Structure formats: structure tokens, C-alpha cells
Image 1 (cartoon, rainbow over the protein chains, first blue to last red):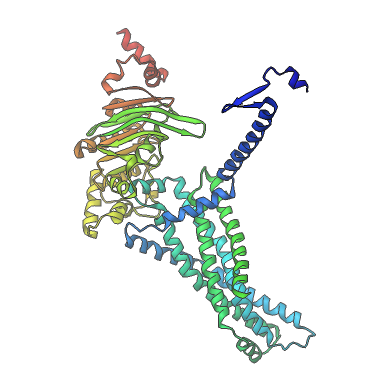
Image 2: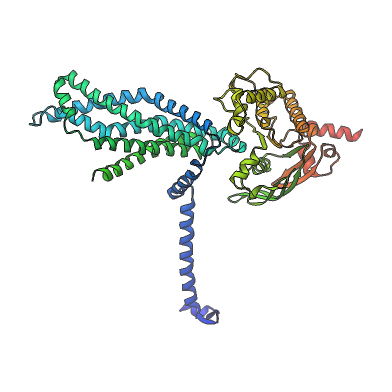
Length: 294
Length: 253
């Protein structure tokens, strides 16, 4: 009431239509709030801190990664080098971890069966299926995310900081393709092989632990291994291995390729590579489990 | 010849380049000079396409750089060589593999032809016989020369050099300057050097542009530097008390 009395402007002419000043103010405030909300939303989506920004950039980046190589023989050499580094370089840690995971599965399942009427040979069956369906692929790839993923992020990030990537760009090399595609191909060929090794070693670890603790005999364990075998589970293991290999490689390379700043930021990028790869591997594990089993 | 017209570059609220117009001439050593933060490196990175200008045009002879698609850009980049401030030599590759890298990637030559070309380039920078060494096994000055050898291995028409003398002793710096100048004349290429080294300015500055706060403050040749009445140039060139004394003594005489 007060504002109406003191305000000299009683009405506003908009496109020949008289609108009271109060209605005009209410309309303006409404438009301003909506506009402000849109600006805030756009800034949020476009901010480098926004997850949407990184998801969009990550997806768009794939257009460059899968461009036709400038020279196939250079890419081939790089693929072979990556396969060697990832495969041979990670074999020992995969074998050690799988051996103990298999052994612990056997010992703990044997403990859980204590005093029940479930036949002892089920230990062999459970170790085999646990390894094939879940442990070989998931544990191996979580470990590889830590070993291979952080290494890739640090290697590519280091190249970015030492202007190696800029030097290649100036030469006309598509660095997204040359640096990332061989790593993706190498990882997707070698990691399923490492997962197969992990499964075999894990089952062997279960066998060794069962024999060592006297939980069951050789014949019982072998009988368990041969019981209720479903070949489809092996397919599931390889689907997981391929998907996890892709996740850990691409996420780690993304963190390294777009690193900014100095050594602290490089360390943070390397850590993010492992953390995000691990989280995404577990999310993908859940989704694959639902899609392939339900 | 490389020509830039009305080049602007902003990073968020920071306006780094504010309308640069300049022509870098063929067969001459073109120098971009200026204080730290003047926008020299940003301009150089825009020229080679590592950064995109907010506004303006870049012409490589008759080719509009901004109109090129990826294939055209790749073709043009075959004609570009660059020496980075930190050399950017690949640590895991030997000197020969470093220099051969652009040939391996783009050339259809046989291995023997590539090796011959590498040896010629190494000879040109006076570094014969270090083919199998690694970058970590040679000195900073030698790394610069290997960087130059890699930059010229594809016979470029345009050579970009970022701070060629940083971290080098004065004698080695002069050697590098002379080498760049000789190569420019020998192959008739457009060389653009980003530097704040006064020796380079006075030795090889055939076409100099001075940047100050993102603007072109002065341009001319090394012979015009001392006679110029431009305050920005004078304060940049005679920044050290020693040079100021020399200048005053020369004026008194």
C-alpha cells in the first residue's frame, strides 16, 4: 500500500498494453528467478567440478580415440608394447592374489559347512563358481585398476606436463588415438587372459588349501569341480573381464590426458583414476549381474 | 609468411591478447619478445594451433588456418616444426628414435632412408654419433640441438621455437641462436622465436615484435632497437642497471 502511494510510476506500457506497476514487478521477479535458475543450472552443468561436464567430455573424447590411425604399424607396435606391459607386468600380482583368494574361499566355506548336512565336495563346486562368476574378474580388475590404471594416468599425465603431447599434436599426430587406442586394445585383449589365469590359479589355491588343511580329499575336491558346471558362467566371466578392462583403461587415461597443473595434480589424477575405476567396476559388476542372471 | 590479424585470446575473465596484427616473414628469424606474462607463449601456441583464438585470423601463406578441417590441419602440420622450451624429447626413446618419430608416423620411406635422414639432421646440428643415447644421457644444450634436429626432419616450411636459450649458458645459447638462424636461411623457412633473451634479440632479430600487456607495443629490426624512442621497448631492453650504464656511457660519448 505504502509502495503504491509513494511510487510515481503507476503503470507500464508493454506492447501497447497497460500493465499495473505491481503486476509488472511480480512478472519481472518471476522471469528473473526462472532466468537465474537457468543460468545457475547451465553453470553447474558446464563447470569443471560437475560430474555431467566430465561425463560429456569423456563421451565426446571417444570420437577422437577411434579415429583412423595415421600409421597402422606405429599403432601395432604400441599395442604389442601395451599388451606386454599390462600382461607380463601384472602376471605375478594377479597370480599371488588369486592364489590366496581361492585358498581363503575354500577354508572359509569349509568352516561354514562345519556341522551341516551339506556334502563336503560342495567346497570344490563353490570355489569354482565363485572364481568364475565373481572373484576372478572383479578382484583381478580391482587390483589392475590400482596397478595398471594409476600407471597409465601417471604416464599420460606426465607426458601432458612435459609437453610431449603438445609436441605430438604439433607434428600432426592425433594424440587421443595414438596414446589411448593401443592401451584400450591391449588391455581388452590381455585382461581377459589374466582373468582366465586368475580363475585357474584361484581354483588351484582352493585345492591347495583344502589339501593342506585336510578339509577334504583330492577326489572330493575334483568331484566338486565337476559338479553342476554351467558353461554360461564362463561367458559371464569374459563379459565382465571385457567391460572392466575397458572401464579401468579409459577412465585412467581420461584422468591422465586432461590433467592440469603440477606434480600434486598429477598425483591426484592418479588417485582419481583408481578410485573412479574401482567404483565404476563395482557398479558395472552389479549391472552385469542383473542383466545376465535375472 | 604467417600473418595474424586482430588476434584476441581470453581465459575466463583474463584477456591475454588484445588485438595483435603482425606479419612473420619468410626466410627471416622473426622474434616475439616481451616481459613474462605479456602473452608471448599464448600467441605462439595460437600460431601452432595448440590454443584457439577467441577472435581473429591466422594465415599460413594463402591458407586460412582457422578454416582447415582435421585433414587439412594434419597436412599443414607436416610443414611445421617446433622446438619446445623443455625440448619435449620422449624419454623412453633413443635420440635416433626421437628424431625418426615424425618420419615413422607420416613418411613412407624405407628404414634406411629414414636413418640417412636422421643422420643428416644430426650432422646438421653437429651431433653425429649419438644415435643410440637417450635424452637423459646428454646435456641441456645437446637436447636443444636434438629438438631442432627433430623439428627439421620433415623439411618444414615453418619453424616455431619457444624460449630456445632458457637454462643454457651464454656461449651455448649463442650456438643455438646461430644454428636456428643458419637453418632459417639455408632452407628459406619462416622461423618464429619466442624469447626474452637480449643476446638473441641483438644477434638474430630480423623481424621483431614486442608484446606488452597483450598488445603489440613495437615492431622493427635489431638495427632499429637501439635508436627507437619507444618507452616500452627501452624499459624492456635496458631493464638491467648494467645495460643502462652502458647506454648512458654511449650517449655521453
